[in-house]
Image 1: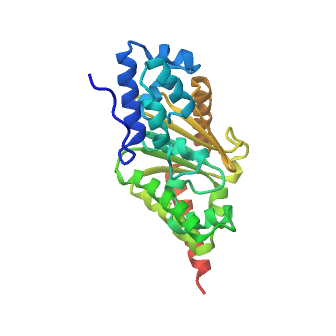
Image 2: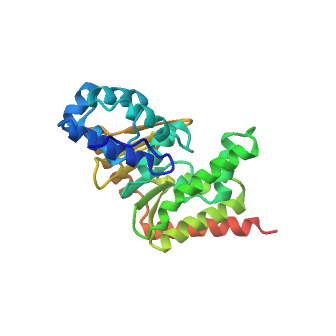
Image 3: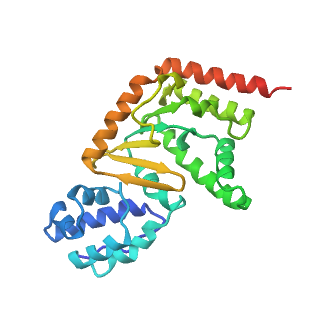
Length: 279
C-alpha cells in the first residue's frame, strides 16, 4: 500500500495531516491512548490532532515519525501545516475555531474578533502596534476579517457572546467607528445569526473577572477552552478545567441582560455614538 503523500500547503494542512495520522496509527495497530503514552499526552489529544482541531507541533511530529515508522513524513509536513497568518499565540485557537460547531466567548474589553468591523479592527491593531508600518496593520486586519467568514454559514458555528458593558463604553477608533461596530453586532443579533448578551456594570463581581474566555465545542473531538492576555494565549483541553469554565460561563450568562435587552442596549449606545459624531 502506498505511503502518505507529502502535504500540499494549498489544501487544508491541519485536516490533511490529521487524516494521515489516523491512517498511520491504525495501520500500526495502535489506539489513540497507546500512541499518546510515549508522547506524554492523552488519547483525546491524539484525537484532536487527527480531527484537525489541534495543530501538530514539530516535537510531536518527530516522535510520531519514530513510533509509527513514517520516514520523516510528519516532520517534513509539520512545517507546512504550522504556517499561519495569525500571531503565534493565537494561531492554534484560530484553527480550532474554524472547525468548531459551538463558540461561546466572554469579551471583557473589546468586541470579539469574529464580530469586528474593518475600521474597528484597524483601530485595535493600531493601538496594539502604534509604530508598525501600514502594510503590517493591513495584513492583521485582513486576517481578522477572514476569520469572520465563519459567520457566512447561517447556522454553524453557533456563536454566543457575552460582552462586558465596558466593551460598549470604551471608544475605540472614535465615535463613528463605534457606531458602525455596535450596529454591526446588533444586525447579526437581529438576523438571529448570533446570541449576544451584555453584562452590565451593576452586575458586580462574576466568575470570569480574570480575563477573556473562549469555549469551543466540536462534533468529533473534546471541547477546548482558550484564555488570552496581552500578547499571549493558552489553549486548554483538560476536561476538569474546561468543565469548570463552562460552568463559569453559564453563571455569567445568568447574570447578564437577556438577549432582547442586550440588543436594545447595544443599539441604543450605537445610536448615541452616531448622533454625537454629527456636527
